[in-house]
Amino acid sequence: MTAQPAIPKRTVRTRRIGFAYPSGSLRRHYVQGDLVMSHIVAVLSGLFPEGEDFFIRAVRRYADQVTDPELKAQVGGFIGQEITHGREHRALNDRLHEMGYPTRLVDRFTHYLMIRSDRLFPHRFQLAVTAALEHYTATIAECLLSSEKARQLLGENEVRSVLLWHALEESEHKTVAFDVYRSTGGTERLRINTMRLVNTLFVPIVLGLTTISLARDPAAYNPVRLIRSLAALRHSPFLSREMLDHVRAYNRRGFHPDDFDATELLERWKNELFGTNGTLTDHLK
Image 1 (tube, rainbow, N blue to C red):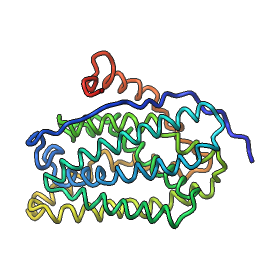
Image 2 (image 1 turned 120 degrees about the vertical axis):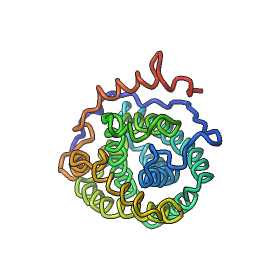
Image 3 (image 1 turned 180 degrees about the vertical axis):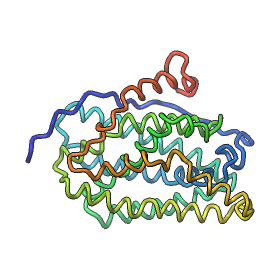
């Protein structure tokens, strides 16, 4: 086996945090009144809890094979962060369910998909899937943290707070599953082929679930509003060429998540959210 480079030192910290959604605190279409984006965010939130559990299982199976002490510490932080993400998104999903979004349906679908994957596919492949999807989430996270236009979509509410915190931690631990995969013998061929499969399946799954979610919303049957909301997606920072190039970079042989350096971005947002006057320090337990 080719010797692997040393793992760079980075802090992957588990923050004990909590969010609250008092009744009436969120508008029905809470992403600045945007119909389609509100449903997309609800679907993604619905995917997270079972998805995070799958990621934890995939990484934990290989934790004993990790010999680098720095990576061992990062694995502990990764698991702690993902457990917290799942818990907080379950709370958000309960609130979205009360507002009429089918987050419980999405959760059941994701549970079935992940459990079937556990039973049918090799553990190495599941770890490769985790590394690929972590690249997706880190790409979305760093777009949110770096683009003022992306953040403006969220307005000023507790959903914005959850997503900014989640984005920060996704970027903090974006290399962990990848480094566990690589350091325990994962091949470039499987890594790249797995991402090709993920690219084929992930977007259609999100689109399909979003369509189901919209079909349950009376507002989606207003053709003018629906068409305007769909047209606005063309200019979304989350669908920019830069974002797509960022995702595609994963298929390059020799790629590593640190090829996209987010050090300054992370420092800025750690201070913004959790510094002395951080906007989320009052959410820490």
